[in-house]
Length: 401
Image 1 (cartoon, helix red, strand yellow):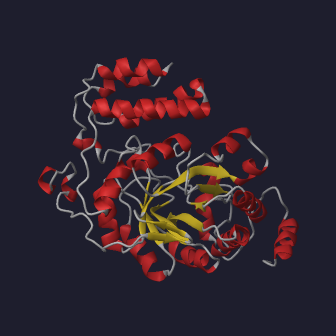
Image 2 (cartoon, helix red, strand yellow):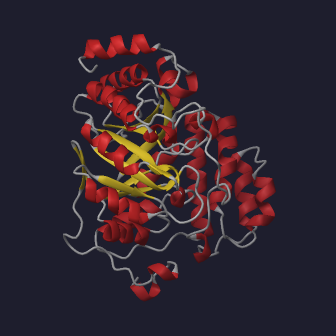
Image 3 (tube, helix red, strand yellow):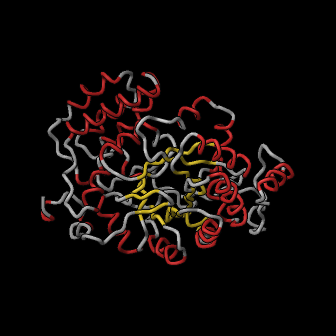
């Protein structure tokens, strides 16, 4: 397939594949990735079945969905399942959520003992129940607190690289990515991932790729750009425009795990294969369902697959007519007859390449603890399971306090 036959949106019709030597492998600590692409950690999405499916199509780093440090340490059943070691998953990568230094340090120590290859910390979650407690995307607004949390993790990570994923700020008036990025680097973060939207934007509007370039110019560690990577060509454009070291792919791959094969092709200087027709998509869906069943069992696997059917069928003619039935899917055996009525020979719809896979285009007013932004230099962790004195004593014992 040549450029004239390329299945892409108009903005990417003239983007050339990578030239020999144009991009270097992405190096994150001891890890080296020839294809500089990372699967974004997404809650309820990047569990092992989907990660393994994406990995089958291409190379890169495939990060788990967010694992809560407290739940992990307490042995929560679902948390333990989501964080479990799976044969052949290498490099093994987990994203942690937490805002208590002791919890984070202890979880990292446990993961290192289990043979983890990469650890990421979530400083980007914009969900109100998280930010109103001073967690997630609220943390970068206090760079000394962010530094304290990264320091606790790095102290226990040994040779395992610890990275940070964050947004550009709380809102347009409170941009935090530059100071937070420098703080993470100073405390030993091996790379910084930047979703180029504020917490207030959620997933609306266009990602601010200029902010990615700004952060890249300020840091010595690798910077990974995140936001509006819907086609393999977007990754090349982002890296050429911002000079970032790699890209993080989130919503664009939902229902399109073959996108990772397209990344491998274009970074190797080749035109990618065309996406599958509806019959091919159905085969991927069935394999995805089988893997969900293996991990979660038939009942929960089917329930999880319901949301995926909408993403896989986005843009296909007639899909709206079976959406309601698929959302009530009772068994996997019901899926093929429903989808077959749409015509399995249908080509993949070009308009689906950039179709929104987020929950609408809404924005929000970010919920924060009362007075949270009054003292941006405060490094006190949000209220958690350990008292301030317990945390200080623990840090002192590490030589980190």
